[in-house]
Image 1 (cartoon, one colour):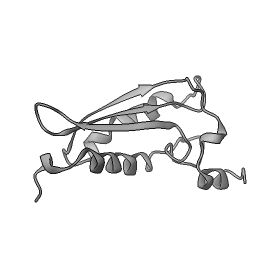
Image 2 (cartoon, one colour):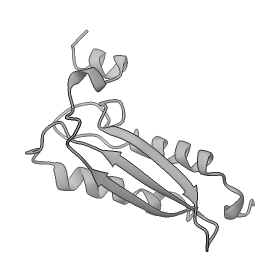
Image 3 (cartoon, helix red, strand yellow):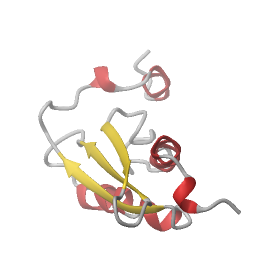
Image 4 (spheres, helix red, strand yellow):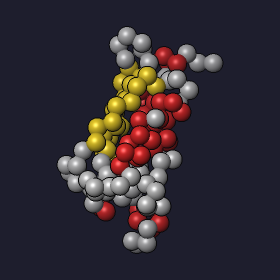
Length: 115
């Protein structure tokens, strides 16, 4: 078994994105990553533990989204699903720039009947 300290920040970022792809807005049949709600995922090594920590900058389709707390909590819970190789994950919820349909992947637009 590999030492968890050997996992690169880039590998951790890929795993975080895999987990983001599993989180769906309950009101929209598309995952939050393809929906364009994730603006960035940045990961780095923690100086002390040498484990990776990440920051996710995300938005919601609307500042008044009724599922906001649930969606953010699901993102914050990602480390619990990553076998201990992610020390922490911070979530920065922003509304500038505002979300719009142009941020969606082609697959998401197709799933929502926008293409």
